Length: 322
Image (cartoon, rainbow, N blue to C red; front, side):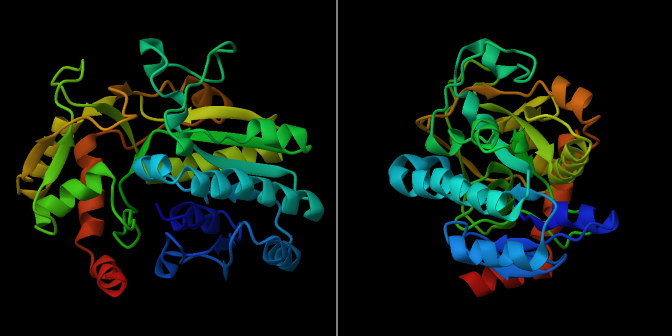
């Protein structure tokens, strides 16, 4: 997901965002707001150079690797980038006197720790256990930030999706593994079919259920988290989701309605590490950040993604990257 969407929100609030990215998974064309600096979070001298140049008031960390299957296949690469990278970033913040961090986390940290884990408020339940099923779900910021005198908000996303209303900025990965973009790729004929991984889950239609939150709602939550830290808010971790789950079959049905083209689907076995259901309880985010999702209808979410999918700018990036 492009960090340019939160950046757009900051520009409208007279906050200048500086994007720092190594472009290993991202695209320069999507960093459209504020200065851009290319570099890796593991490159300590380069990080410090950028910190010294811009003197940021706060940091938002989006630079973790987050492919479920890849995290199982390449655990050392994920530990190095996600754990060592976070430590490198915190070290640069300490040396530069920056004490506010908004951390892009994930609902994958919950794994399958019982059915109660499917709907729970991490900030309101003090004795819960976390059972990450893959390495990308095993990194979080509160412990690290507390040990180094920082205050942080970890925003545990459920399934980020959708695109900017302009249709000019949206979800783009290489490779693309996320459900909604792949369903739209199947609808447009870019791929032959969408694979449904598991049809025998204990859900209403047998397919996995997820909570899909629009990227513009996520952007609003990041702005709210920054304001919270600026007003002396304490370190916390919060779920970001709509509280409404949709199954894989429901996503396919919605894509068919939005595009007018029924995506071809094929059944496949379950993937290791995929829980049957992950739906957010965002009560704490609503209370602490005064945050509420505005785009909860799945057809509306997919329609925004479809507008981006058909955009010539996206097609140009895909063609250049091929």
